[in-house]
Image (cartoon, rainbow, N blue to C red; front, side, top):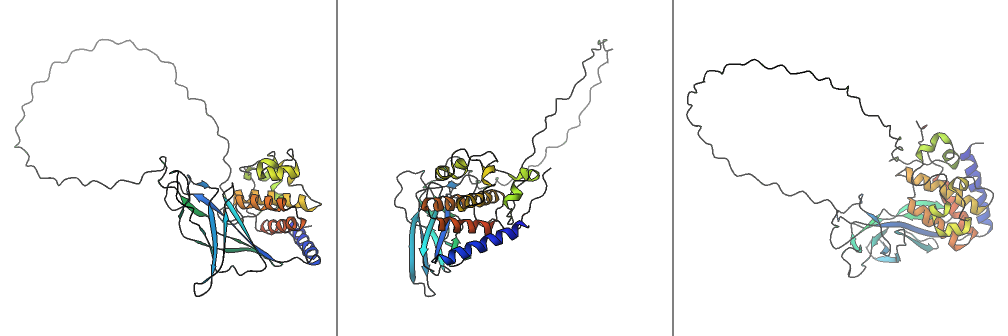
Length: 331
C-alpha cells in the first residue's frame, strides 16, 4: 500500500480518538532568536541561537489597539514556545525581542535588532493551530573582533601635474665587445620528474534544498539515499540527537536507525516521525519546521507525559513529512 495512503489512514484514526475524548482547542507559537554577533542586521555564518532572551507576542486590532500580549524566554536551544488556550485570533500578531535591560557584559546578546516578525499559520487541525515566526535577532554592544571589517573609503590620489619631457639627446652606441668562444660545459643528466600521487577526496554531501522537500521514513532508510544524511547518522544515539528528555524515555542505547522503525504505539510513532522531520529539516530550507523547532516540540510532548499531546505532535510531523520528496539516487 502507498505510504502516503497509510499516513492518511493514521491521521483519520487519530481524529476519531480525539473526537471521542472531547479534545479542546489551543494554539501554539514557536520561533528562535539568533545572536547577531557582527551587527549586520541579518543571519550569517557567525550567528548562533541564544538562550535567556525575552520574546513578546503582541496582537492588535485594526485601530492599533493591543488586545492580547504574551512574553516568554528562549530555552537553551535558542527557541521559544507559547501556548494560547481556546481558539484565539492570531492572524494579526507579531513576535519581537523584548527589552532585556542594561547589558553588563559587552559580548552578551540582548539588544533587540531587526523588525518584528508576523506570525505564520503552519498547521490547523481539529481546533489545534500552530504558528511560527521567522528568526529574530539580538545584538551585543559592539561587533565581535573576528567579524569582517567594513571596506574603508577609497582615498583619491592628488591631481597629476603634466611634466614636460626633457629634450632627446642622441645616444652614440659603443662598438660591441669581441665575442670569446664558450668553454665546454659537461652535460649532466637529471632523473625524470615524477608527478606526485593523486589523492581522491571523498564526495561531498548534496547541498540542502532551497525549495520545500519532505521525505518519508521509508525513503530515509533506503541505502541509495544515504548521501543525504547530514548532522546526524544512522548510528547516532537518540539521546544525542534529541537530548536528555528523549534519552530518559527511549533509553541511551537506541539509535536513529532504530527510531525510524518505530510503530505500534503513540510514543514510538512520535519518535519515528520526529526523527524523519529532523532529517528533513537538515536537508530543506523550506521545510515547515527547523531543527530547533522539531527538537523543542518533541521534548515538550514528552515532558507533559500526556498521550494526547504525544498524538497531536505526531500528527503535526506526519503532515509535514507527507510533502514532495526531492531525492535523487546518490552517486
